[in-house]
Every structure is written in C-alpha cells, then in structure tokens.
Length: 201
Image (cartoon, rainbow, N blue to C red; front, side, top):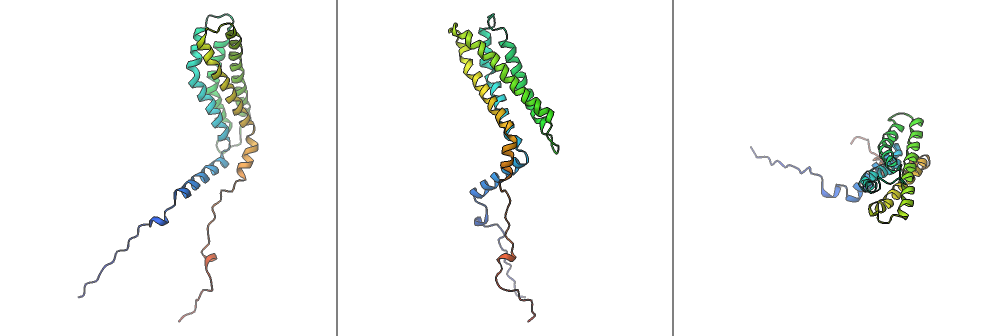
C-alpha cells in the first residue's frame, strides 16, 4: 500500500488581514460616539464631576485658610459656607445621576434640583471668597488664606462651565445624534461581474 502524504494547511490569520492600529482607533472612537448618542448627558456629568473632585482636592488649602482666620469676627460664615459646598459637591452628583434613570424619561424634579445645587455651591463659594477678599486687604500676613483664594475662584469658574454645559444639553445632544456611526457592509453580489452559469455540462 502506498503511503499517503497528509498535508496540514496553516489556518492562522495572516498578518496583513489583521486590523491596523488606525482601524482599531477608528472603531474605538465610533463606539464612544455611539455611547454618547445614547447617553449625551455624560458630557455634562464629566464637567460636574471634575468640579466636585477638584473641590475635594483643594479642601486642604481651604482648611488651612480657615484655620488661620477662625477667630476673626469679620468672617462669621466662611466655615459654614465651606461645609455646605463640600456636602453639596457630593450630593449634586447623586442628584444628577437620578436625573437620567435608565430606560426612562429624564426626571424633571431632579434636573431642577441639580441646577439648584450647582447655584447653591456657587453662592457658598462667593460667600467664602468675597468676605475673605476684603478681609485680606488689611491682613496681608495671612499667607495661607491668600493662597486659597485662586483655588476657590477656579472652583466657581468650573461650576459655571458645568452649569452652561448642562443647560446646553438639548442642543449638542441633537448635534451628536446627526453624526453618522453606521458601518457599511459590502454585498458579495455587488462585486460579481458577469452572469452565473447554472446549466449542466
């Protein structure tokens, strides 16, 4: 009996058929845009989260400023304003997440509460910043309190940006939905040339 030669074909995918880095990056970006189409409120959530996390980081600097000015009668409300800002910076994120429940319509009550909390935090920051500003005009030796002022002002700006982005949500959500994220698939019949022979020999 003659020996038969068995040939095993290599079934590995050739390197040339694997998607390139550019193709993978393009697909990743397409998936992110699709996710934004479904949840455009994530953009506003990002800005709001940045403002809240930023305030948590600067609490040490603000605490030092209040430590050197705690006994000053000119600053009776800086401590309570800072406490309210800290508390609302956490609650505003919870309120925002409840504003857009899954598979349900946006909750108008929580949306209004979110805006109210944002403006309340801005008001508390101003209630801290303005009295401290006038106090430091005559007390330039309070270095810790002076150092905290730019950080508080930056927090006010971040909150204002977050509020504007949240208010413009209906506008840019429509623009995002207009982005074409469909995948075009080529049909095998479209690339055929000539007729198909179905006659028997």
